[in-house]
Length: 186
Image (cartoon, rainbow, N blue to C red; front, top):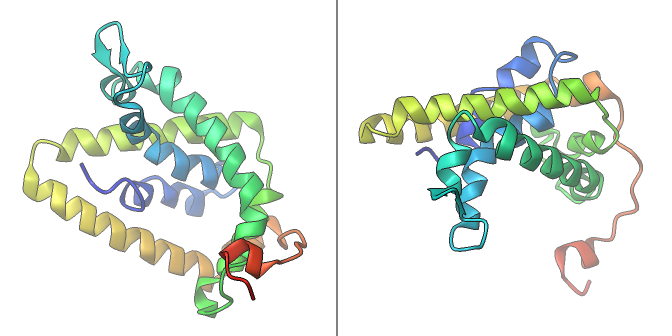
């Protein structure tokens, strides 16, 4: 299995670049990680469904609507709520990454259907990627490394062209409190 993030995000994220209004980037990225979030529930009361481990359900066709979609929708809300504050506290350099532009994700509200379909596309891309690589150790390693490199290149492309700003405008104004945010007394 490739490293969930950023490797899995590299597959569906080009859809956002291709048709920015047709896809929700947050839902694509979170959805692409959602099947593996079931592993975090191993050993809990939610671990098994009808004798099948939850991670197995999440990685199968039934997992798309039963696990991946609701998890992605919930996590997307959390990402959007946190994005303005987190992004405002990120370093301004390197400028070509435009990390502070990610704050606009808190103000971006794609249509619900766009978010749902993007969440499903992201999760389905994860399942497809795993189906190809899970049983071939060399392909697994290559996809992890290649996916991470591709995701980094996509982030640089988005930052250099200031695509988040072009798609959604300015991030909301946020009062920064670096001492509190970073946990330092300064």
